[in-house]
Image 1 (spheres, rainbow, N blue to C red):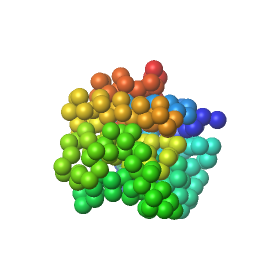
Image 2: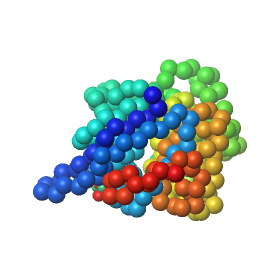
Image 3: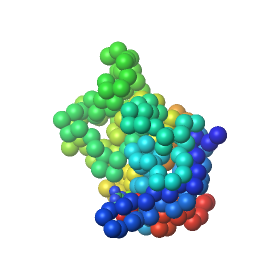
Image 4: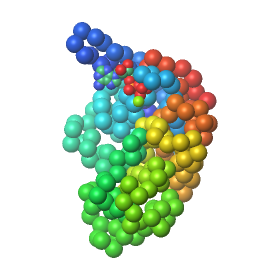
Length: 226
Ligand code: ADP
Ligand code: MG
């Protein structure tokens, strides 16, 4: 079975009298260690799709399998545990703690989730900061870093727990063109190094070119696959 399997998934948001079909009968699969993007105009369902894969939301219809588990059937606690052990997240607005250094921001998920000793944590944090080229910035605070550097730190933070799958919703939307492409290339090299599957969304043509698989959404429907 593929790492991610989406079977006939629909998501309908009901707000008062209004029904929004955010996803309509989508079926697709995503292989382990692949480098995949969801593209499409604003409102096409990209965030909804990533939220379903990321166990942040449930489909109205259909099934979502991640790492062989039917995650749409999980309860709240199971979803949280699964996110902590299998998934990593990268956000559009970086979402680093401003009062923590680069090092502390990357260490944070380990402190929260895993039971490693301080020396084991040090080894893991240093290794991943080295990989993203930010070890020499480890004592800086986020406001001392450029946007591209902040997103490198966020990539390191997503990877430090060694997740199977990293999800990134518009991770380059707050970056200039050059930094955007650099961050995506960094993610791809992390996939090469750690075999981590990456799924990201974007509407930037320069960024989508860097993906190996492109799923295009339009009005909640999957329209094309490269
Ligand atoms: P994208 O990320 O491609 O911009 P979204 O997945 O955020 O698209 O949204 C798809 C559609 O679902 C849009 O029409 C959006 O307005 C609607 N939508 C998303 N989230 C909600 C929600 N929580 N409640 C109601 N409608 C929503
Ligand atoms: Mg979105």
